[in-house]
Image 1 (cartoon, rainbow, N blue to C red):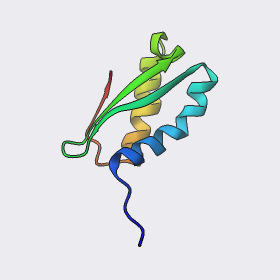
Image 2 (image 1 turned 90 degrees about the vertical axis):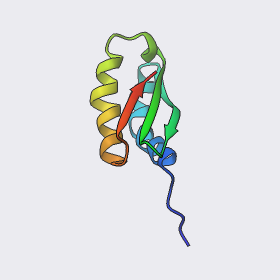
Image 3 (image 1 turned 30 degrees about the horizontal axis):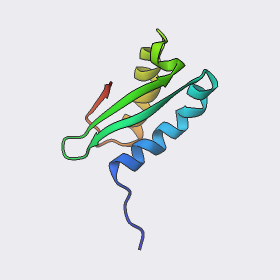
Length: 80
């Protein structure tokens, strides 16, 4: 019997789709917290992404939109 993946695992899988592009520029992102009860996810930008002025655009247009599309029960995504 296949067990349904939890929200955290599905968010990680979504991030895996953008990680190659982030890593190509010397950065990355990680899930800091994932609250399935209220649908909240906290993401931390790492490496070169942490101080890059464009990281907020990457966060909103790449990471946030991808997570919302892949894991529709996520209601809030916060950059920490």
